[in-house]
Image (cartoon, rainbow, N blue to C red):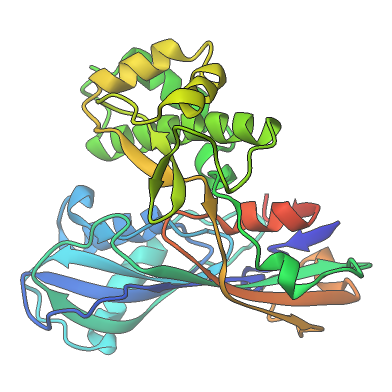
Length: 329
């Protein structure tokens, strides 16, 4: 058993856009480092500070709360912020409006870079997430090999998307989706949860049938990668054996599929497998703890550094190779 997130410093994420800001335009871009705050905490704080709708705040993806993460946010504003010092009041608003845990966990946010661009930052509009993760244990596995860790792993959605009551809440919304009291942002979240749930069902069924990265006849392939459906309007592109596997996996969920098709979202694709990039492994690290945890005293630790494409989950990668306990939950 290895422990993750014993402290926020044990789980670090750096977002890489992979493209340059224009330097001018109607959207202010802030590169924010946050700790013990989720992405929506920051978005809500920025919306309050700049007096705009939360739906107007742009970000490329949702980052972990119990971690130290860096990511870009965009705000449609004429505010002439040109350096990080001028952005400090906005960061104060972000932290002041967030709810912290009862165990004295400290929320923190700071702006590291400022820029401007002509367009809002959209979901998935980044090149890579770079992870630096500390695994702690009383006895680390003796057979951890870099070669094995570099292998492709199932590209399933993690508990950040599907944990807790997220699925049941999304199903209740779907049954009453004409309720106008639900915000556009919340509707989008429920749709994402349900599409992710269906994808995971299909991926899990394929794994149970021992179908690996090579796929089966009738699979959709893009750049050589087998793809699964993110459910929505439009006919599935899978055929033959791939279509039969898909139908078997979704037995009992036909009504959900049908309602998603009428919800207005267009069917998309997601690779069934993903490979970590530039993976490095180091042993024996010092704690960078900002809060106390019984796990920071565990005698052994290793640090994994690697990159993942947008939408891929580091937790799915870790669970492919280790028995994992998440101390943040």
